[in-house]
Length: 237
Image (cartoon, rainbow, N blue to C red; front, side, top):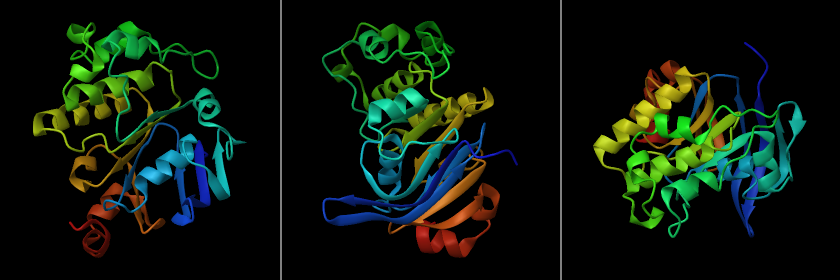
């Protein structure tokens, strides 16, 4: 296996005085899709926020492209090539779809420009007819597509997707799944935080299961699916 592109080693994260992650770890390899699985409140979103610099990490190591990104502000981490799609989407409701995309544009860390806006619209055909509509007027599924498009506009090396299927109608969940499969087929490296193991089957290569702020399983998605004890204990499957 090639060298990890992203390594998180035994990080501790707090919200005020309340500890949310307890020595949690994961490795991500180039071109793979890693599923970060766990129940609601297990620590998945906190892990994504810690990697992207949205919340501070007190202890441990976070290494990206062989460089430590621990302690860097979120905007500098974004410039290293990490694109973050937050669970709550955080689009600009008073800006148009087009402006939500354009405002996020930047070249990749080495000057990459793989995702001009024309290609984003091609990847997300749902958005182009809505490009003049205000973000706040979009449905939940449309907002989710817009948030992914906004992340792509930053030409990321790694894409962090936090609960992209949560709260969406089944048809939109299917569209999001197809989108992730397409991004994977294009060679993108993805971390996919999800509660739903079935959504990740056929998409993810490996899985890390997190429970009460620490990783309790790390292996192939096939090994996880075959492990009834882990599924029943930590995923309620």
